[in-house]
Length: 142
Image (cartoon, rainbow, N blue to C red; front, top):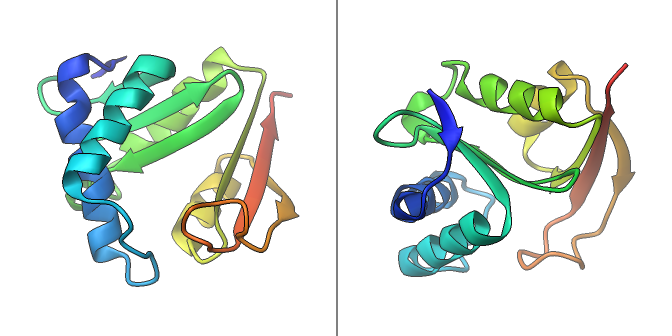
C-alpha cells in the first residue's frame, strides 16, 4: 500500500492539506484548495513523495534529502497506523531525518516523540508563511 506518488495524486494530496487546515482551529487558512493542489504537484515534482493507499492516497510523506517537508494523513483516517507506516518507511531509507512542525500541533509532537524524534529548536514563527511558532525535531538511526 506504500508507493511513490504519481502526478495524478496532486488533487488528493492537495485535498488532504486543505482538509487539515479546515478542521484545525489554530491554523490560518492562507491558501485556496486550488493553491493546495498546485503545492502538492510541486512537492511531487521536486521531492521524494510516497503515499499510503492503492487507488486513493490516505496519507503521504514528502522527503527532500534528510528533511521531511510534509507528512499528512486524511482526517478520517487518523489512528489507523498510516502515519506510522510512512515515518517508519522514511526511517528505513535515511540514517537521519529532520523536520519542523508548529508548536501548537501537540498531536504531531507526540507522534514524532513516539517515533524517536527529539525537539532541538524552537522558533518564533517568523520563518514560516503562517507566522506560527515552530519546533524543529531530529531523528538519527542508532
